[in-house]
Image (tube, rainbow, N blue to C red; front, top):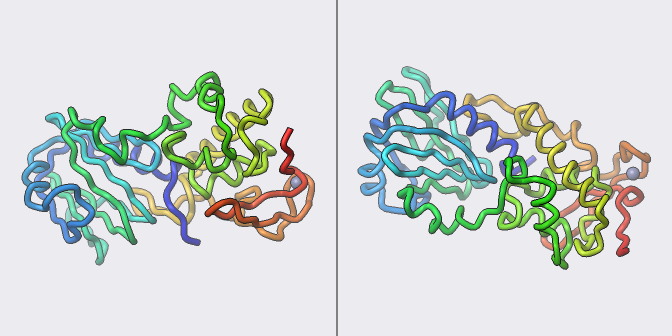
Length: 278
Ligand SMILES: [Zn+2]
């Protein structure tokens, strides 16, 4: 199964990185694939060396490494990249394209599968960094209250699925988690936002948090590695309807259908998630 890391996987890995590398000073960087950077390798290495990790957090699908003094290293794993911690004398992954070593000889490697980014941005220019500045609020953030969510949906005329997986609206939900979120909320992916009742919006808000929280508790998807190279415990078997074409719906036993919704595929129970435009 090919997946792209979404909010749960990034939350898990950012938490582990914060635990392991906070307070460490960058000694050296090796870059084998310059296209992932937002500057030349020479500039990147010069700017990053000697800086200390202040803390590691995440927003949507991005890892934010705050450095002292006043810089951010922003990592996007793109399609499935492995970001792996190493300790001295540990064998490194053969095909890594990026290696960062701290002064205590620990560090991490990154192995991209396809695309992905490692951007180095001065703190004062963070709000001008095009790929992260326009990200919506992560649904697990404190600011993401039910009131905030209701306001976000006001006067929106588009379909609910397309809206929620657009990173400008909500950061961190992609085509994996959206499936069970919409099933739990009993909403068809093409349902127009303007037709949602107050109760449906409440249910949707709770479904988003439930589905993402559960995955974080399980360490994320079983198809993605964490900072220590361990895979998460969330397998297809744990999904309610996602990727379960032809299997019975867990609520009503109607067979789950795979349908085309815009440029993405959706998995729905046709009975629990009817397309009704109220
Ligand atoms: Zn059903």
